[in-house]
Length: 202
Image 1 (cartoon, rainbow, N blue to C red):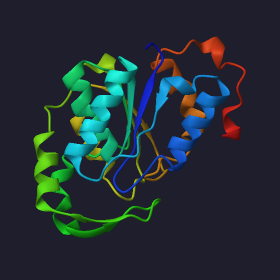
Image 2 (image 1 turned 180 degrees about the horizontal axis):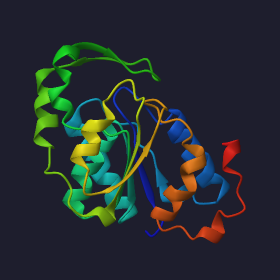
Image 3 (image 1 turned 60 degrees about the vertical axis):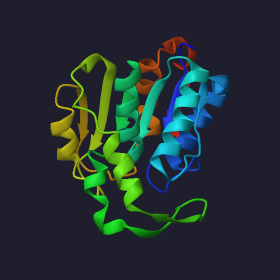
């Protein structure tokens, strides 16, 4: 489906995150809700990937929009299916970072508690792909004051891709709503559909 979007949230996040809600509100305003999926991902990567594969099958060839760990999932899926991906402060090799996080976890939005195990880490490692070499299929949006991930890791890994690096900000990516015209354009949604929209209100 041309102009369809699959939003992939991050670790311990949900469709209730600010970015997900802003994107959902804009697509509703444009009458394009049917072209957006924002699945509530299972905490285990294998089950999360099955959910994402199902959403891709439903939407056809969506733009993958991945935040943080969702950016890692989006990269694997974009390489697997030849899709376009827009990554927001994406995690690079997250399985190498999770050693100190094993054990009890809590979803920031649902309050669900779960155990992060070595099997989660192994499943993440299995999703790793070589750095993308097709710059036309990727946009990577980074903010330098990300308190969770070092933006330079993504800058190096995605160096062949179109990078947008903003000074300041944080891991949640400040000013996302104002950047949504660029996302919609990348998804193939005609500019006249959203040219009159005031993105600062979302």
